[in-house]
Amino acid sequence: MRVLVIGGTRFVGLELTFRLLAAGHHVTLLNRGTRVDPFGSRVSRLVADRTTHGFDDALAGRTFDAAVDFAAYTGDDARGAVRALGGKVGHYILISSGQVYLVRDGYAGRARETDYDGHLIAPPANAKDHGEFLYGIGKRDAEDVLAAAWPAGQLPSTVLRIPMVNGPRDHYRRIEGYVVRMLDGGPLLLPDGGPAPARHVYSAAVVRTIVDILGRASTFGRAYNLAQDEVPTVHELVTAIADALGATPKIVAIPRESLAAAGLEATEVSPFSGTWMSYLDPGRAKTELAFRHEPLASYLPATIAGLLAVMTEDAPPAYANRARELAIAATL
Ligand SMILES: NC(=O)c1ccc[n+]([C@@H]2O[C@H](COP(=O)([O-])OP(=O)(O)OC[C@H]3O[C@@H](n4cnc5c(N)ncnc54)[C@H](OP(=O)(O)O)[C@@H]3O)[C@@H](O)[C@H]2O)c1
Image 1 (tube, rainbow, N blue to C red):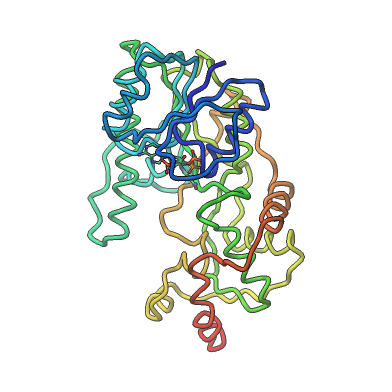
Image 2: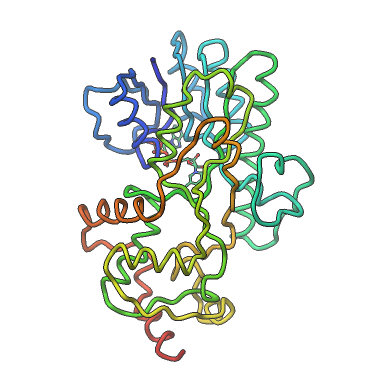
């Protein structure tokens, strides 16, 4: 197939591009060209900002069997996709987020696709929460634009909603945040002791599914949650990372208020401990897409091996606070 990847040079999109090439597809990447990619002459490239008319210009006169969009964050982005790709792409896949459920009023725990509809929460006053809210609202707007375009036949589309993604190329460097602390031998601060469910997704499971469903008409107009089967707590997940690494860290529970009083964000000391963490039910994807996810016991060691293979002394930014973390841990 001739596949357009909007994005494709950072994390999941990059991994997808390798997987598409391996399966024999012809890949065209469209992005702003801010990163050097590893694909050489194996891909075609279009350089454009998808939020500008340059997007339409770059795609004018081109057709594709499928497109996978990693860079749509708003209703305008999706409208641009319908405008530039409508009638020219056989199947369009939007990479959305579990955040679409977190902005739903009454959201409690495990979300199914049917939990999408309904009232939304009020915009939070706090700036950080407000940014998270806007991300969720923007993804919902993008999904809604596609849902409205699909019955009219403008752009046959599928939405994939994903929670936090783990994998060796994670640019948020979340697992690496724990690994660097385990490597220095000091204790790990875990906000409230890490009791929350941590139902994440492995990048390889996501890209395998995308390749599997390209062009599959039964997915048109449908949304799917992709997430791992296992539901460890954050504490259990951190312990599993330690096991995979061969570390035995001392885990020190700290109330979130104490961290805040010390001027530290929960995610700065424990990247999995954010409060905007979706918890998705992958049941529909398992039934309709035969979605299968590697168990933690295989994907964590693979991810950590990938990290260690390219690790340098350049630690994730929040590690700069490590001396303060250790001083706090010593008082607990
Ligand atoms: N990582 C997670 O935990 C997680 C969780 C849920 C959902 N998601 C979703 O996953 C997607 C990102 O995944 P990824 O970073 O792994 O994908 P990726 O395709 O590997 O990287 C993102 C790409 O988007 C391009 N891009 C960004 N803004 C652009 C613009 N205005 N115009 C054209 N290209 C643009 C970037 O290149 P240039 O900078 O060169 O343009 C880059 O190639 C997002 O939609 C995000 O909401 C991620």
